Length: 344
Length: 259
Image (cartoon, rainbow over all chains, first blue to last red; front, side, top):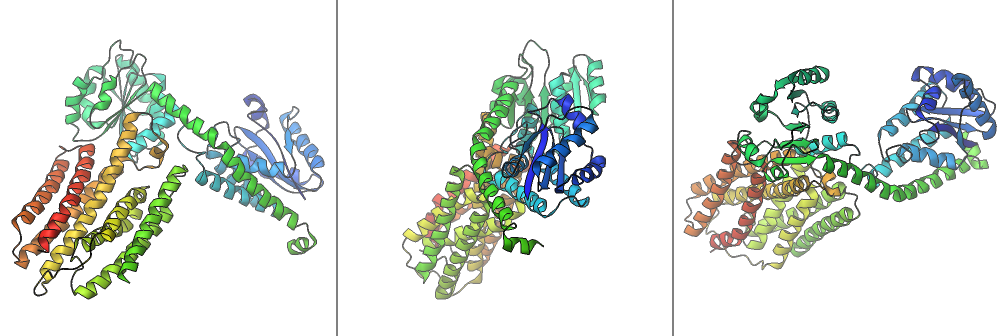
């Protein structure tokens, strides 16, 4: 018995190609049924995400399985499928790398593990996952967990929005019920506010020199508009301040902020300055309870996280290699005379 | 047997601290399970030691500074074991184990002869002593949480956080933990003072004023926090420095208590 992996991903195919081959969850059972109809294929699990479409199949004849799968995809998409493929043990290694986030566009991202679990669950429900595949995927989940806990591959956020979310989390804990004020209705501030909203921030106040723009953005993100002249009045009630105005001078200075901070009863304030030139004087970071991050520091953290993750890849690969050896050992054992007897 | 129990406790805390250093050094930042186990075993060994001393002295085993330090670190360990999992403050064990180890080593090195303290057993005196030490256990853990707050705050202020930043709890959670531990310690200390007053035992003036100073410092810290006058940073700094003062004054108070 061999494990075959065949598919296309973000490295081998552009998005407009990948989307042609994507398989929706509702179609998965039918496609899996067709794959299992290929001569020599005993079981199949199919992973279809925005970055990859991959088949994992247990097959006696991998090349025949590959041709059959290619034909199915080509027929569905109406164009030749640019597939890569791996046989045992590379297919096993590939799945372990995918589940661990090493093959992802952003190294170490964890969403892929949920997608692999979902793909396995769909195949199991459809009766398409046979014993070697059950074992393979259970092993892959263990590998992913081990890689995540024993290395720093998932360490740190990797985008400006996620950095802001993590920093806010490290200041306030849960973001549920926290209040955000946006000064200057820019695109990055909107994206950052949306990232924070996705983590539980409920109240967003938008203030802009042009009130209509503030009102439009507030309506779009479900917030409240405030005249720019009045933003200081709402200051005591907010937790996070995102600034991205076009002001030629700094609008947040220690002189202005110190008396306002006294009104906050010791509550911390997270200031995210996305403006260039900057809206906030770096000296406000020295005020007790104020945590200031500008666009450079946010991007720096995102970049450092990626560097840390890249450095961890070798450790991850070593861990994965150990598990590949373990799985291949098991696969061989079920084909030994004793093992064959046990698997009947 | 007593020495064996003390050595066992020290080794447990040493193991916990060493393992923490190794894990943090290797960049894994997950010392939790081993640390909790080390602290639990250390606390069990200390409990064994204290029960033997209690049986020998027929009173609360705080007859000398060594025993007092064992009792204090035992209190800190027990409170950590209770609140650690409840608060889910990751790496709290990593910050607690050095303090426990330090107190335990000091206890091991200090002379352990017991001088007779009371002419006849007085339950109020025992309650006063035990409550004080449990209160200082809570203050000790507030100090640990305070140090964690200061480290995490520094990471946030630096804008170039080190890897440990991702594994330390949010400063708001630490601030809340500090406040609750300070309140718990303060209430226990107040109760211990009430028990001391009910004991009707004359105490040295210096001990009285030192104890009052500590009580006033913690009361001021809590009052300031309640009125929003003390920010998270000052609260953390206050909790850490006041406990440091406690550790400095403890030998003096102990000396005056056993005179």
